[in-house]
Image (cartoon, rainbow, N blue to C red; front, side, top):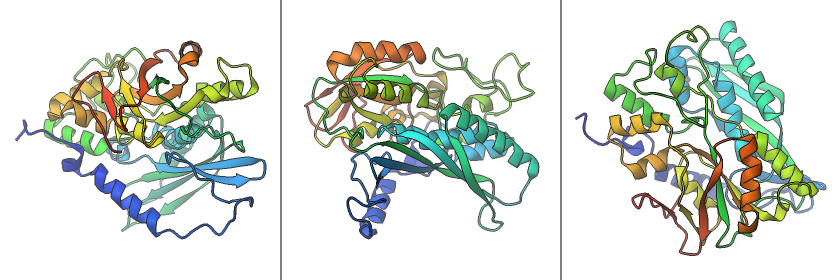
Length: 376
């Protein structure tokens, strides 16, 4: 059955079912006890990339997420150097999408048995993540849960802020706005249930050299200590490459544009999307009637091509499950697109204009006609 096509649902994760479950959870929640104008009152915001509450003349934004089943590969290899970066990245990148500057992070680690050496590695990873995200590690919790967890798990919550009334929401999007794509560092932290299914099918070794050339124009693979003398990165190093954190350059862009000395006016930055689980369908969260066309996609890192080939995964499923080299999308007015693209590209090489907003219905289309999404 090695030629049977694999997909995310058959490997254990049904994105549509998850969406229905989240909708049920949200539908069962009670209204906030805080009224508009009070500290902590909810601020409605489309897209769902962060929860917003009032805080005087400011708004606070919160995001909660974990590393997901990528941790199963880290546990298998006993390599935790990147998981703190993954955890922080998945949270702060969501805060960016509402125009919030990340400020602080708290982590939660669940283990079968405490191990000081492992916790030291996690601490170093979190410290590096906070340096990259320019935030404070404000606390955390470690729970020893034998019988509940079978291996180490990690999640966290990030806090950010923005001036009241200056959220980036997508509500002012219009046909003709252009999309700027920021490259990912690899798979990031989504789709690993399918990755593991493909690894099981191929019986590939995580410790041997990657069975493809992992070189890619927009990233470097962060090597494991002790493996740096190998001629080629191991498959495990490629698959565990930490998630890129986009605080630099996006917070500088937002701040400069708000202050009037950036490459455009802040009003010309219309929307941002973190391309995580759901792939390109994340764009549909930003507006309920406009469409999105990807005409000039970013180059696809080689691990995605290898996964597709080894798992017989079709191209639409790949773009539904993975970021395919596109970690973040910034949507700006057409008149500002070239200047914003140049500004970002100087700080994050490989960023480029990838497409356009259109009025052809609420769907995502692609230069590859097989890649179409009409719901998140």
